[in-house]
Length: 267
Image 1 (tube, rainbow, N blue to C red):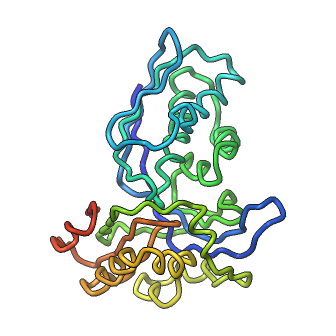
Image 2: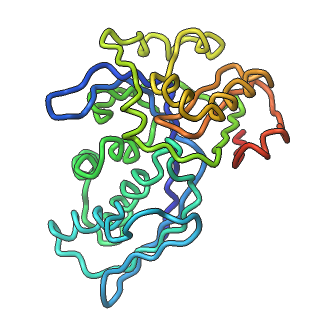
């Protein structure tokens, strides 16, 4: 069976404080994005993971897709499988591609082997794989709090806007982002701001990672400013970067972005 795992963007990202367990409490909005990886699972004589498309850094034996399979295999004695992943979601971009792949694999294994797991059970497994993995089970806009794994649905719909996303040739690690972030323990009223008109977001919704990342990688800040210069109603870095997106009230094509990174247009 085949499935298509979509990415996400963060709208706002407030880093509140550091927890005793080493993680940070956050406030952010996750919104599904129409960029997809392709996943296929077939029974095989032995379990293996085969990737194509964009190169995936690191040891493939540590890929979250394998960890997702191992989680369910231990609980339900699944047979060996071949996992095929064709990667098109940019990596190190703040788009949650690896988390999406793991979550969609859980759903795919559930369907393929008739495990009968409901959403709440799948969410519980996804939480064991990563803070934002659980978002991709329901895959609807949410306000995420805690470490990014406590969800409250939010009624936002960006389908009336064109979203332009640019992934520069820069990889930003999560560790680098947290080393430079300024904490805002009081929060910034994201829950109230997100339901207001998009035209107000520029002045009310912020990504706390941007100042530190823009200082270390000025080209990312340049992209955000360029999107505003070209008429974006709202522009932001997604997650801890390095991708930047803009929301436009009308359809645009911006050829000047082509030299600055990989560009996606989503109407």
